[in-house]
Image 1 (tube, rainbow over the protein chains, first blue to last red):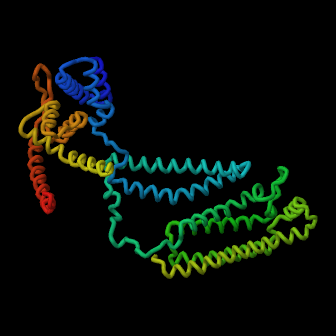
Image 2 (cartoon, rainbow over the protein chains, first blue to last red):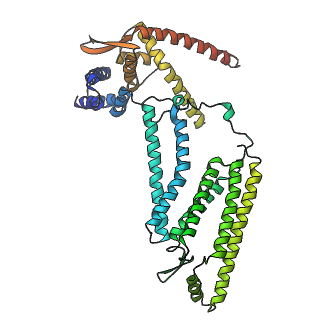
Image 3 (tube, chains in turn purple, green):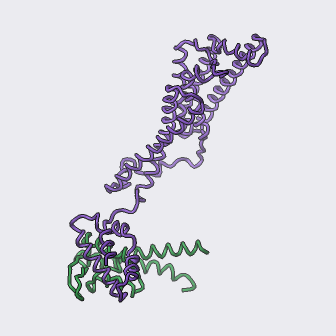
Length: 323
Length: 116
């Protein structure tokens, strides 16, 4: 009978004092009844009876009436929606913060930088998942219902999106925008250590380290505005008129700034040209400088061109936009 | 075929889950029972339920005021007998009406099938 005692103890040990004895007594009676029917108290019979009652921990949970799930079906839909919202806003923001944090810490190489950013990002994603789940777990256990949460915004057929509405802004466009502006914001911080020629443990920056702080500030500011714009694109995935107009103004500002930057300052580090020259052994500094200037010119033209195309395109699409 | 079988088993489980409470209070409306005798009785009606499911369910129904219980000594053993409270009897009446109506509604649909 020792097994029976242990079984009853295992079921009742975490129960409140008010019901522990009662459940234990009843359970003992029920087990005895089952044993009576078997007509034997052999070890084998006891084993079989206890097996038919099942895992004591599960039985205890049923007695407690505790819910056998983390988040019930009623709240699950809202839980998923909350997760999507948290991730869609949180991940881009987290990416930027982690990246800037790592840049300030001056990582040793681009690989260690990428690894640190990835692990930081994964940590933040797990945190977001954990906290949102915890909140919904508590809501579920305190019997909050989905309709309590959506009371202020009950669903109405008028909220339905137009069936013809295609995503005007595909996801990859918004995401690549975010990456581009994040890099732009990061650029002034990493230009002197990362972006350049790494030869014999010596780094020669591509961009002129003498560039004034005002320019650096303007680049970061433009990056910040651009990042805001791309987050809006990610969120709205269409071109409302206001966003399109903003996009045009931004494209003009950005292009003008870029052209001024290239034409009025010495953007490219003069030392870079000579390093490149000695590295590829042309022994013709003027030719290398020329090549660099051409590259800068063409790159600028391509960037300005794509900005202007994007501006025109956004205005065109905003005519069909729903918002 | 396995998929269909699993689907069928699943649906049968849903049926059973939906009917277990009305079956229990139906039995207890006629006579008081202790856990094990109720288990055996349900078995004899070919509605077998796990002890691990039935016994906690009885307690839950007691907590909800549907059942009441008392300890009685029978066959030299103290046993907890469950019976219906007034609330339970009222619930049973309402559930029975609903169950029958549901049956009629579903049967109306099923009657249209040729193999019936």
